[in-house]
Length: 92
Image (cartoon, rainbow, N blue to C red):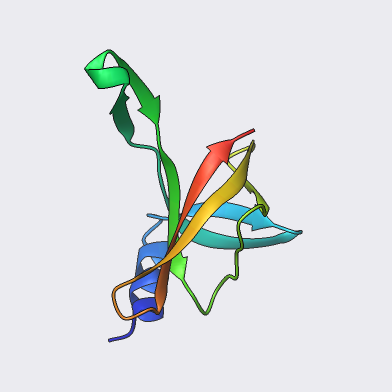
C-alpha cells in the first residue's frame, strides 16, 4: 500500500487538517508538539505538517495557512522512501 492511500484513509476518517498553500487546500497531518528549550527552562512549539509528496510541493520560505493561522516553511524533509514529506513551520 502506498503512502497516498494511507493519507486518503486518514482524510476519510477525519484525522487530517486542511492546509492552504497559494489558494489550494490539501489535507495534511498537522502536529504542534512542545519542545524543551533553554536547557529545560521553557517550552516551545515545533509546528510540522506531514503529507504525501504527490499531493503538495513546498519549499523553504513558502507560506501556508493551517486552521486560520499563517506559517512559513522552515525546512522540508523526505520521510522513509521519499514518497512522504515533513515540513517544519514557524508561526507568523
